[in-house]
Image (cartoon, rainbow, N blue to C red; front, side, top):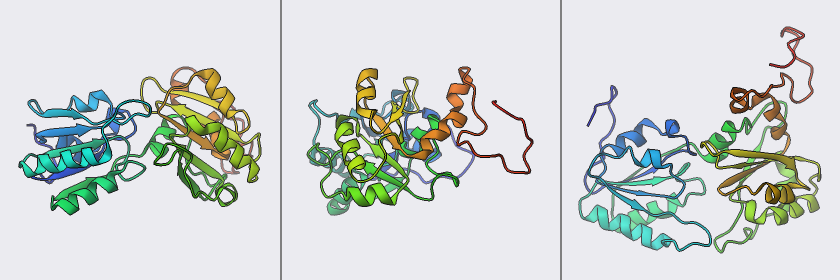
Length: 285
């Protein structure tokens, strides 16, 4: 195994590392995550982990798929936790590899608590959550001082697969200019209806980002009132993120992937006058 030029902790036999793989692009994997892949005896990975990342595992490592996808036969959460415990008790070096960040809508907390109950030592290695990194690949910042000082991350479905119970839609609609929904396309129409009923404008900008930070990334820019119909017409495939609010307008100036393909970017996507110290007449980039 090649050595990294900085000291990093070793993945010891009998330990489980819960590692976030990031939103898709293998280059967003952390050094600790790569280090664990090169040491692990067993890699238990999710459906949202890019196969190119899985292939970074050391030769001879056992690769175990543990992906959960709606509508398809999938391992249960208790089954996955029991698998991690079993491997650790067999003195294997176990890497639990999860898309995004393991503690942001990733059920990493549940798995870690199962390890605690079983007396298994573990380490949590954060990853770049898709709600930040995936939107950045679509040219959408989750914060900008001219649009919002608050951003709210919301899951698009509950444990049973329906819209989450207990959400205060009025507080959500009024309290956060920028909303980012994970796994929300299935219930996008109902979510939009609740937000509009709670006071959000039907013409508020929305972006739906499918397969963010991958070669298959697609983005649909729409409005809250038209989002469900436009996403259905575009046949966007999950996983997808839904961004709601004025941050979506910034994509006209920050879609750096689009610029690589020839898109002209606006230097003033919000329609604001440039600060006095900036050169006038820059126009489009």
